[in-house]
Image (cartoon, rainbow, N blue to C red; front, side, top):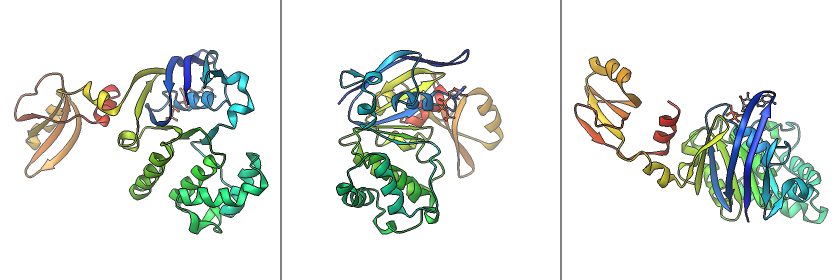
Length: 285
Ligand SMILES: Nc1ncnc2c1ncn2[C@@H]1O[C@H](COP(=O)(O)OP(=O)(O)OP(=O)(O)O)[C@@H](O)[C@H]1O
């Protein structure tokens, strides 16, 4: 399976929101990272076929999606950034409704609903009202509806916003499992959501694809530039002014600073292993 973006460009009025995005994606989890307003949701809207690019094409398995029409939509599962749930529906009623929307044959509905609820660990919530679910359970229900039609491509826009750490990990595990046979594109600005599960990370800023690669490849781009330095409290302010300080952690009477710098900072400085968050923050301080 292959999804290819060729020179995707989109403008809203005079503002160019996507500028010549080109990439090729296949099965596996991809993290789409970028600061607020980078163009993630616009790119997703084009990929799920609800928005046309001004220029460029999206090609699914060798065919232009603009010509595939609903045959392409059948391949897509989508969880929007702000999903609207009908709170008075029960979970099973909501999923039956979504099966009808997606044209799933009546004979398959019951089995398919049981399968997707099991996949997202919501079997026990079958008869619960959607309004009674926690935020995390509701997001998992969002995934359940997105995969009802066995999509080849699953697109999730900021799926973990507002989730507690336990739910975030649970969610991450579900996504990793789904990525074994689907192309999963997960847009987020929470770097840790994708750090451990993404096959590749795409970083966009101001509508341009600025970096793409495996997490280790991206981390290698700032190897030798991430430092830990121990400083006194009285010196903190001058360090923060002089260096790009990523993190400050109290260590006994002193403070440990995580710094991104091309050169070894003065004082007690030790090299640290780079993380994806270091890259993100070095690009968007
Ligand atoms: N319908 C629209 N009309 C005009 N401008 C828009 C429209 N939708 C988005 N924009 C602008 O396009 C830019 C990219 O927005 P987009 O929502 O794609 O970014 P994003 O990376 O998803 O941001 P966030 O993380 O905040 O959701 C922003 O400057 C936004 O204000």
